[in-house]
Amino acid sequence: MRLVLQRVTEASVSIGGSLHSAIGPGLLVLVGVETGDTEDDVRRMAAKTVALRIFNDDAGVMNRSVADVGGQVLAVSQFTLLASTVKGNRPSYIRAAGHDLAVPLYELYCRLVAEALGRQVLTGVFGADMQVALTNDGPVTILMDSRTR
Image (tube, rainbow, N blue to C red; front, side, top):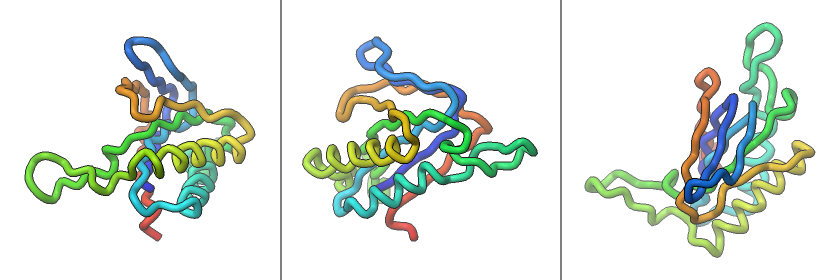
């Protein structure tokens, strides 16, 4: 599982020109599920998402988590995070999980983050052509990969 976490002041997802989801301060998380990912990977990544200290404390030091600051989370599925660009100029997505694995693991990730935060995680629509807008705060952008331990 590969995640891109962006600390945002606001973020939204639109589909077909209509607003689908929007958050204020918190995290926009792009979620890529890879063939071979397991529920254990998802549990670890969800826990890390909620606990990662990338929000400023009163001294301006990144020492607080999204849970600590009461931030919102918008999680958007994005298979292109698993692109391989090793050969040629057309990315290969062979490592991206198919719907049968990706959908349940993406939904589990969203549910676990919501449970840990005690509030709803907003989402995009799996497989839809989405327009994602955000204002990155900092900017702070963190890459996480479940295969990196």
